[in-house]
Length: 188
Image (tube, rainbow, N blue to C red):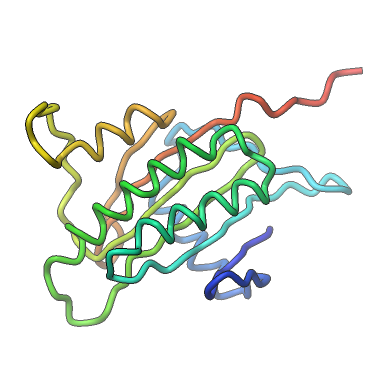
């Protein structure tokens, strides 16, 4: 298994505790039996892996932009350029919603907004966590409103999106993308 954690722009190998947190988060968001096109990344020697990258978002006006740049960089590192535009747009909206709505109410402990990218062989799930238990609400498009279209955008550019409550506090909102241009090895 491979994991990445970021502090600024540096990437480091994930320690055991970080992988446990990421694994628990993925298990909560995608319980056994929930359909998703997970195919582990196969490495030399036949080992199969799920790659994870994480980014902590600050509560300021640059949070969505920083998350978009992080996503773009990771997808390029993972050689998935065909989903960069759609995934970075969705991440911008997910983070903007989390910072704008998920941090409205104060909590007893600081709970930052975090972005997680889970990569399997042909797919990426972009997940944003925040401390609010309030579900995201997909609104009907209002053509004269200046806001309220974020989830509509996410739904239109992603293969699938959803949300799940987290224990003990908060929620994870995610959008999934399939890179259909990755060539599968031919059968011989």
